[in-house]
Image 1 (tube, rainbow, N blue to C red):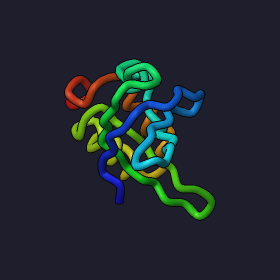
Image 2: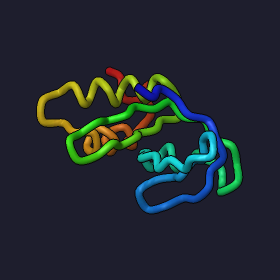
Image 3: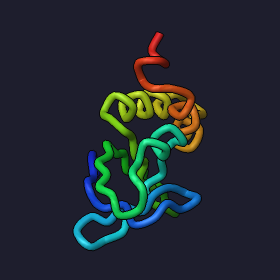
Image 4: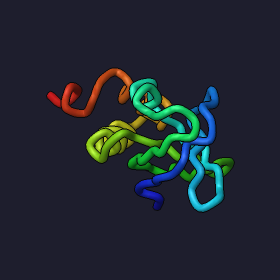
Length: 100
């Protein structure tokens, strides 16, 4: 499991930022909130991550902090809530704001 990454932001694409780690550019899916907090291309970024492995894909989801990652994991543990919906829910607010 990839739990965190740190590297230079190569680009901001429609699906998320591409972050270079060890010479490899990784596409990281992030919420709008996290995307807004990332530096411009060329800047250094550090994200907590979750790797979602499916039959047809490997998707890396990134979060500004471990608490947001934990919230994402809680959302995806609910039946019928996939990673894209969970990421959208995480974009509504921070983990502190969404905890009841």
